[in-house]
Amino acid sequence: TVQDLESRKEKQTPQQQEHQKYMVPLQASAQEKNGL
Image (cartoon, rainbow, N blue to C red; front, side):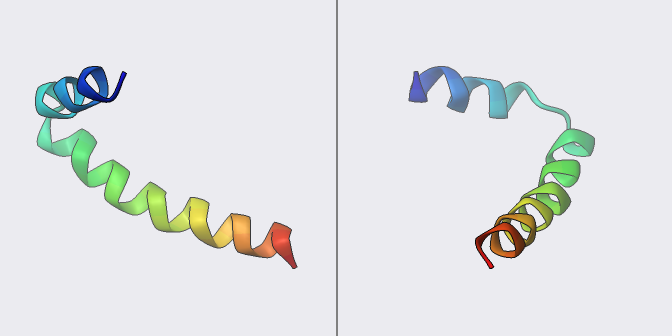
């Protein structure tokens, strides 16, 4: 559920959060390439 995901985010370490910041843009760009 959404609440479950929110609780997981709170438990994540700053290192994991930083990792996600970099991963999201990479995934978005990959999806754009596949769309083309």
